[in-house]
Structure formats: C-alpha cells, structure tokens
Image (cartoon, rainbow, N blue to C red; front, side, top):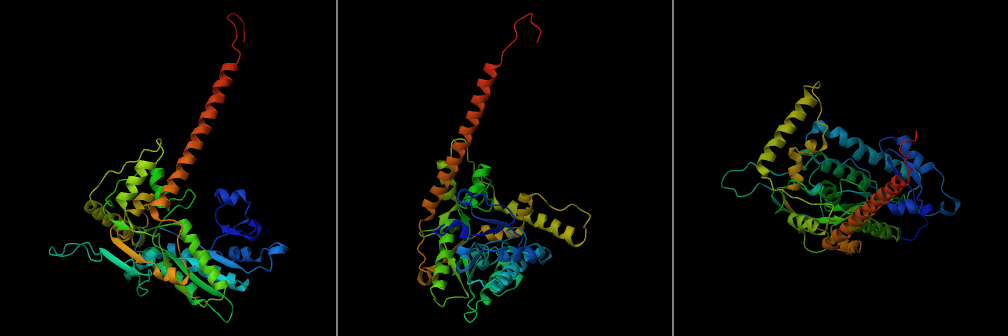
Length: 388
C-alpha cells in the first residue's frame, strides 16, 4: 500500500490473498486464472466503485509457473500455458480495458547461460561457471541458450510485454527483472528462498561457497512502483526491462546459512549437512532421463510427482551451481531505483517476522493447553459407590 484506498486496488489470483495487510485492509479479490481468457476478462469488466472508475489503470502482472527442474522442449507446455499464453491473455484484456500502464515481473534468470560441467581435465572450472550480466539481458530466444524452460518462457513473456508498448495508444508497458533469488514475500511461499529453508529447518547443501545475488520482495515492489511513476509522469521509457538487486556486496550461501542458524527461533533448529555436488549432478541426469522416457515413450510409467525429486534435474544446477553478478545500474539511473535495505537487513527483517509468527503460534498452543487443563480440573468426579 502507498496511500490509495484499498478499494482502488484489485487482486486477481487463483488463490485468495493470505498476506496480513491485504486481509486487514479488505483489498478486493477476484479469483482468476491467467490461462482462461474469460476469467481474465472478468477481472477487467467487473465495475469499479464510482470514485475510482476514472483513475489511471495500472496492471502489475506477476503470475508465473515457477519450476527450475526442466530444460527440455518436451516440458515446455507446462510453462508456455501460464508464462506466455497467460501473459498474452492478460495483456489483451488490459488493453481492451483501457489500461494505462502494464508492468510484468520477469526474472534475471533469463540471462543465465547454461553450464557445461563435463570439460577437459586441463580446464579448472565448468564452462560459464562465473557470469557477469549487464541488466540481466537475455540471449537470442532459443531454448538451448537458456538455463531451463522457466527462464526461456519468462524471456518470451517479457518480449510480449515489451513489444506491446505503444505511446500512440497510451498503453505503456515494461518489465522488472528481479535478480534473481527472491526472499521476503511475506507469505508461506516456497519460492521465497529464506522461508523455504526455515520451513524445512535447513537443507542438505553443496552451495556453501557459491555467490548469487539476492533481492527482497520489498525492493522488487519498489522497482515496479518507480517504473509506473515514471511512465505516468510521461517519461518515454516504455518497452524496457530493468534488472534490480539488493544493494551492497552479494551474499555467499554460507552467509545465508550462518544468519539463519544464528537468528532463527530456538524451536526452529537449522541444519546444513554438506553433500558433494558430483553425485547429485549424476543423479540429476538419471532423473531427467526417466522423465524424458516417461514423457516420450513410456507413458504408462508413473510421473515424477514428488516436488523435491522433480527439482533434482539437470536444469536446476544451471540456476544454482554458479557465481553470477547482475548490474542493475540502468534501473538506478532511469528509474531512480534506490532500494530501501540491503540483503543483510532484509534477511534480518524476514527472520524477525518468522520468529514473531513462531512465538505467536507457540503462545496460542500454550493457551489451548492451559484451557484444556483447567477444563479437566473442573470436571466433577463421581464418589465411590455412586453410579454415574
């Protein structure tokens, strides 16, 4: 929220909002499926309150199918339906509704080059092991140039949005590329890296020495609002995409693990057993091979439905087993992006929120137990020799 009346905001999603602020302020919610054009159209044709009907209309499009496990064209349909076709549905409906600004949430993962782990013995590191990305710009739009199906389809969706920009039609569009590990969603969201670690109580890891840039959901939201403000003010920067990261030096995974172990509530013990990456990489080829066989030739075999196992595929190592730095100077220059906190502060805030929720849950459990104990003490007991 940034000052608008909650009734001037509309949340459209498959699931009702769970965030405390949205619930407390009674932000209107419409159930919608981005893959269903009629469902999307209903979001825009539902009348606004009279006092808001003539306000500029901005759409922040964040819906996506997020899964880092797949990289083969056999599995593109899962991603295309939501990430590309869904984006196209929302774009069309927004334009028909007279939308002024349309900003999509993309991802800096569109810039990640796939790694080659099997290199000659005289090479010290896998190819593309260290990467530097200027503004998170993607390579030519061919699947094999991307880390996986997710990154590829996000790049396709981003292009749809950017190409739709029209100053003549007063329909300004653009995209924000979070770079690229996001935390602090304020929701029970396993795509939020810190929350996922906390709910699991840690994780087996081979990532301790690797460096990846993080960005808090709050800083990502700020970038969206800044872009909107520039477009509404008439700045001719439509059709662009901007990488955004937390300020300051990037974190190692070991920094995150140490913070989580140190700051987590005592009832949330964190463990980080180290595992060697090579066996996992080899296993990932086996899992990927099985999924391909099942999809292409042996449909009678059961699908891999376990989430963790489906993630243990070759593509996942493209997203995680590398050192990558993104340059977000373009967003700072053109949008005035000046994030409110760095990764250290952001994770501390996230840990504080987690600990407060745990403390509240434990307190509620104690109160229930106390009431049960009092009730048990007050139940009359029949004397001996008296029939109950």
